[in-house]
Length: 398
Image 1 (cartoon, rainbow, N blue to C red):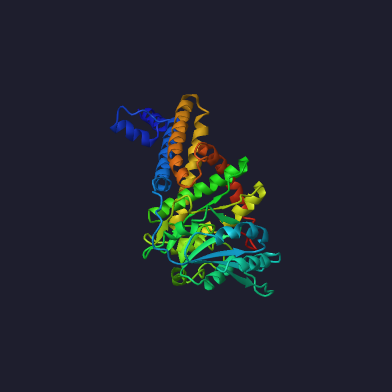
Image 2: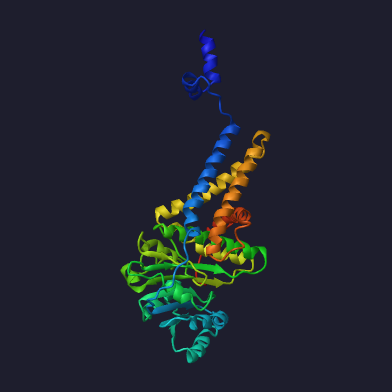
């Protein structure tokens, strides 16, 4: 009798004994069933992630232009950007807006950047140049250039972009400044990449679209955590109230996202969605150049607040878990069909949500293959993160 019970105890784990004792109809769960359950939970998590972090943007109404148009200072930092300024600076200077100035901070350029600014200043009286000279004893990053631009700004409403960017049209300032109110000190817009041919261009644009969908949706819910310097606005009063970049000045990058992560509250941030409230820049032409750009951007993420880092990490973890479980389930004949059904369902729901979001950001060619681009990003992101460990930023570049 003792041996009989001993054998039973060994063959059935204690947890199963509990189930058999109180639930006589209990059927033991095997490895394939556990994988299916985990696959289903990751699917549910991703859908919740899309609803929370993409759907708010997809459901956002287009911003109406404000009748009240306060003066605006547009700040552009440039280092060796003579070609880009020659091509793009006039697009900012001819904006359809009653009162604005464009401040170009010439940060230690050794090319013809200063001459280009001077020539345009002869035509446009609202263009202002600020020079920063090279100092052998003091090395600085972009934050110092941004700070100099802010100090030189005449108006309280500040609108930021980069020298390699251009506005969607002549109503860019008008639509972005519409986000400013007595309660809204921060305005977030979309910094896109120009549509060109090639797979890499589509992948870079989708990456920017996906990131923007997340941080714009978060801001719409009153939980903003970042912005991008290609298209960002805030009030000078807020900058000084936050003591500028003092808390993270020692970090080379982060003049945009780290400041917003620190200064954003549940009530002080507006999101502007319109076809005009967009800036475009040229995407990198090679994977190596894109990797270097992403390395600079990724150096700031570890300095976000704990809530922001947790949310971002959880979103990626769910994606990795879903795909790992999917490919694992395909290896078992009894679970392959269920895995395929789950993938098709995920792709379908993703396209529905992303289709609406892509329309809001004028990226209408993104949603159809969103599942494919997203999968490719899951492959290349680890490359960026690993290479970031060996990246030592020593200068800034737009």
